Amino acid sequence: MPAAIDPIIKQRVIAEYLQGVSRDTIAADNGIGTGMVSNIIDDWKKGVQDSDYESIRELSVYCKKQGVTLNVLGFLNETKYLHSELDKYK
Image 1 (cartoon, one colour):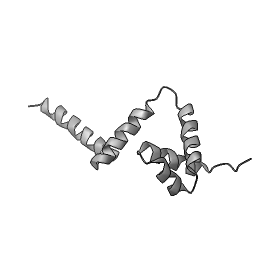
Image 2 (image 1 turned 90 degrees about the vertical axis):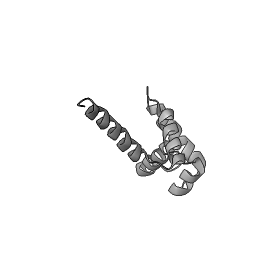
Image 3 (image 1 turned 45 degrees about the vertical axis):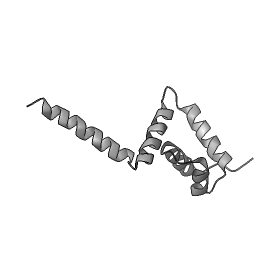
Image 4 (image 1 turned 135 degrees about the horizontal axis):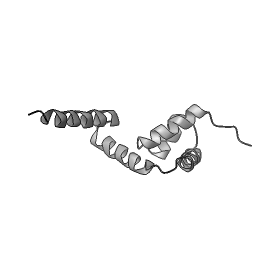
């Protein structure tokens, strides 16, 4: 029986996956095989019910291609919301 994967490695794999990092890069970053990366992601997907994780990943990949982090995107979204709220007082 293979050794259990450290939960911290699993968390890093999922985080990188959601950030749009390729399977090969995730494997290299975490010192595990690409098959293990796929298994960790598949197991995680099974545990996530009624969630649109693929849309989150697509958004993350798009932002990455544009050179924008999700934190910056969230900040910009909040800023836009605050501006719209302030516009109500004009």
